[in-house]
Image (tube, rainbow, N blue to C red):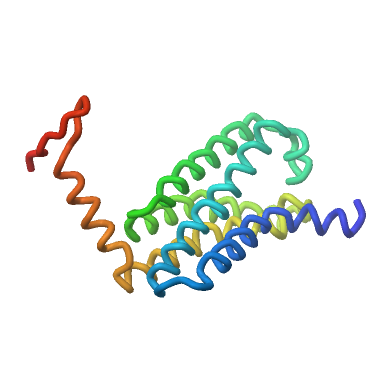
Length: 192
């Protein structure tokens, strides 16, 4: 494998980070407030970085099992199917916290949940890198950056929003909306 091919393959997972950063930056250039900008950054990070990045890994592990095994430096394994669906779970969680009105607490929780899986994966990649000299493009480089940054940035952005009180109004509105339930097209007051 040439140096250029290796560099492209190892850096590719970081494309989702780049898309999230560029997208959020462009959308917030003329943002009316810091709070609105922070909300936009959180939503872009959830969809573009964690959501699309995890969807790419999910599809790659389902469709290209042998090429993914080769890219990581492992042999093909039935565990790849499980990794695909673990990443699909991250997609679902990312889409859940990308919607308007999501509280910072929900985003921190999703960030921590993603961190448990992705930081564990990052630890495994680093271990294989040093213990077994696995320098395959799917084991080092962009995948490590993605595994560490996807949850970390989500947690930091949500923590910052929590400190600024961003999302509190959305949480109050959401709690108020929960007091009225709709069944079969008819609205009923929910009892506490």
